[in-house]
Amino acid sequence: NAGVTQTPKFRILKIGQSMTLQCTQDMNHNYMYWYRQDPGMGLKLIYYSVGAGITDKGEVPNGYNVSRSTTEDFPLRLELAAPSQTSVYFCASSYSERDPRTQYFGPGTRLLVL
Amino acid sequence: AQSVTQLDSHVSVSEGTPVLLRCNYSSSYSPSLFWYVQHPNKGLQLLLKYTSAATLVKGINGFEAEFKKSETSFHLTKPSAHMSDAAEYFCVVSRSGSSNTGKLIFGQGTTLQVKP
Image (cartoon, rainbow over all chains, first blue to last red; front, side, top):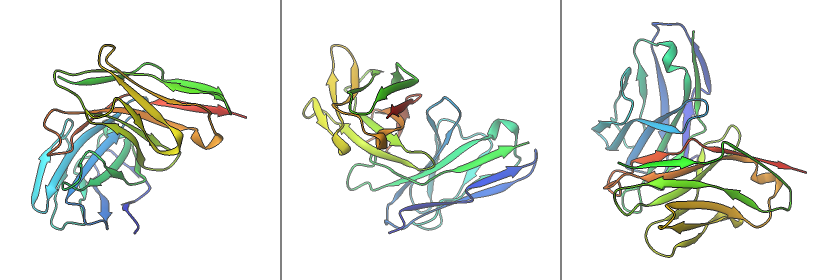
């Protein structure tokens, strides 16, 4: 199993541009999450999904959108990039039938908005 | 409300010496507590978790943590540090009701440096 994969690894955006961060998991997990990690800070939850077609906001959802059309994929969309969105983004997944707090993380996407 | 505070942003130890990473929590309910580790350029990995069973929890790679309700602490320890332990460590508390959603609250992280 590849686990949780994220693309791209690194991206530079100009202010106002848009992009989609891709996340795919092959563990048949029904729960998926997007976090951002700022320097010297812990991870903050952006959005999460408890199954295909079901998404909900986390702590810091402003400026982001998500969709979950399949169990495997959970893309994160930035519509109008702002410098405040410079961060490292992590996708994670878990399985509700065990303990969904045991989460499996991707390697992260480093985003720089200039 | 729930929160978690990691008392040290950076800890440096010599290889073969004990490791202590400190974490205090605040919770209105009986908390579930976790330690996650992040090696350089990798995603986070669960080290261990406390979910109201035994207060001394053993994890992977020789790490353990003790839940102390009277001190609202969940410190992470290891008897002998190895070079491969160098990483970022996060103390995490789960939100009440999060056993259904998996929502987690992360501390700020502690960077563990291991010197030869």
